[in-house]
Amino acid sequence: MALGKNFFDELKKRCELNEKQILILKSLRNSDLTAKKISAKSKIPLGRLYDYINELLSYGLIEKKGKKPCFYSIDNIDEKIRNFMKSKFEKVLTDEVAVLSMLNGNEIKDSIEITKTKEEFTYVQLRMLSSCKKMYTFSRFGSMPLMIYPSKWEDFLKLRKAVSKVRPTLAHSSYEMSIMVTKAYIDAHKSGKRLIAVMCKETFDFHIALARKHFGEEFVQNMIEDLKQKIKNYHLEIYLLNEHIPMQLFMNEDTVYLSMVHEGATFGAVIHSKDVRDMYIAMYEGMIDRSIPIDKYIKGLLKN
Image (cartoon, helix red, strand yellow):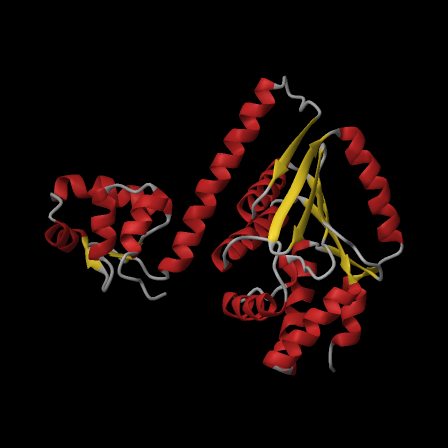
């Protein structure tokens, strides 16, 4: 990742890091250093330096290498920033769910929220993911679940950029945010949460054809093999429906989120109601009965 001129200023502002932490990160920008050399470059007294270093280590923004004298590094800073932002975001979600649970006496009362931006779309989706044991999703016509994208981030971004050139994306305001959401889903799968998705078969075929057109057959075969591994490793449940799905939908134990995009604008309704959720679950189960499990479908796409 090429660090721009204002990178550290933005990092300080967006990530709420203090001046001393930023000075340490700037010192490590071009090379790995010992604490003594960091102190000399940053002008932070060695006696105080370790407090800030230990904070940055706990955030995962730097790493320690070797034995005494240890060297400190910010290798793979883009990955470190993504993980740091994700952990901060998840803490906010966890705190919000805990507070709302206490306010409502452990029961969420029926209510409706309106969302109007991609940022709100992302926040609601991750909030529901954070608080659920099981989540169901419909992907609207033209939209593909992020978990189907390649696991290798370079290939993820290549395909995501190709997709964004041919259709508006409902989800997430940046490629970095898309990666963060994908990581959240992977972590949810690893933690044992059951996540079930239904998408349009025509949409899946479109994305495979798009990948083949722009990046070739080898890219497609690697993408399918990668998806096979994710289905196996994370117990993915994805179904292909030969019908048109007009909106994005998420459901957990007590919430339904309906979201649409029109002329580039994202808007939706978050419905906190177990009765409404049960109604949509019945519809969802009927769709699964009419669908093809994606693991069976992709067998026909693999070349021997």
